[in-house]
Image 1: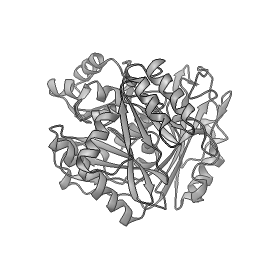
Image 2 (image 1 turned 180 degrees about the vertical axis):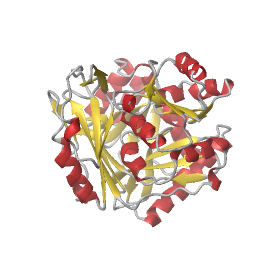
Image 3 (image 1 turned 90 degrees about the horizontal axis):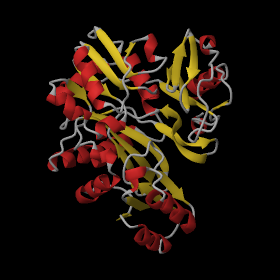
Image 4 (image 1 turned 120 degrees about the vertical axis):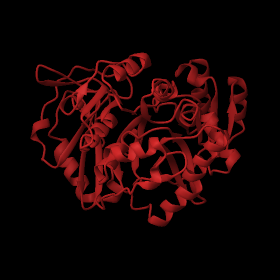
Length: 419
C-alpha cells in the first residue's frame, strides 16, 4: 500500500515512524513533514491548510490511505474531499470533527446524552458573558468555541481575569472566528489525563492512557501550550478506572455521534479530569494527541496500518491490539518565547550524541545541506521507554541535555510525581 501522513509535527513524525514498521507499505509520504520525517519517508511540499493540494498530491502519488494528523484539515473537511475522490482516509469527516472544532457542539452532545462534564454556559455576547462572570465563583474556565491551536482555554483565577479573557477572545478577536461563541465552565479539580480510542463508529478500542503537561514552565506555571511533555501509562489509572472511562465516556460518545447522524470514525481523544465525583470530560479531540502519540505508539506492539484499515473498513472488532507493559516518557524541547513569538533558523547540534534506545521525534525542524535547523516553537520531543516511569524519565533527561540550539528550554518536572 501507498500511505500519506498529513502534518508536519512530532505527532506526524511518530505516526510515520510507526507506520514504517508495517511490511504492507510500499510507499510512505508525508505532507509537508519535517527534517525527521525526511529521513524515513518522502516529504511533499504541500501546506496542511491547502486541501486541494493535498488531494492532488494523493492522486498524483497513487495514495491508498491518507492518515490525517492535525485538527484543522479534519475540521475543514479533508476526509469528505478524499472520499469524493475514492481515497480512503483515517479520521472523522467534517460533521463528526465538530466534536473538536466546536466546543459548543461537544458540550450540547455531552449534556444531551449524559456524558459527565463540567457545568457551563454558552454566550455569543461579550456583555452578557461579562455579566454572567460577575455572578460566578472563581476560578472559571473560559473557552473559545472553535479551534485555537490548544491556546483558546484560559483558567481565570479572578473575575477580572475572566472578563479580560472574554475581551481578548470576543472583542480583540485573539483567535478570530473561533471566538464567535465562548463557553464558560466551572473549574474542575482533580488529576488530568488523556484517554484515547480507535473507533470505527461501532467498536471502541481504547489505547494506553497518558498524562500530558500543558503549561510552559515547571510547576505548571506560565501560559498554556500545545504540550510540553507526557508520560504513559499513569499509575493513577488502573484497569478498573480505565474500563469505567470507556463505559461512561468513550462508548457513549461514539453512540451519541451515531444517534446524531454524525457517525465517528478514527481516533477519539477524551481529555479528562479525574474528580472526586468520577472522571469528567474537559474536551474531546478528533485525532491523535500531541504529545501523547509520542509516548503511546512506542508502546504499541501491533501493526498500526492494520488497525487503521480495520477502523476505516468498519472491522475493528476483528483486530486484536497488543500493548507493551513498559512505560514511556517524552519531554518537549522548545524555543525561547514559545508559545509566543520565537526565533527560527537556529542550528541544532547533539542529535547524534544520544543513546541508541532514545527516540527523537521532530516537530518544528527543517534541514539544509546536512544541517538541521529550528522551524517552530516546539522543536523536538525526546522519548525513552523502559521498565518503569522513573527509569524512562532518567533516560530522557540524561539525553535531552546533549541536544543544543540557542535559547532552548524544556520542563524539568515531567513525570516527576511518578518517579
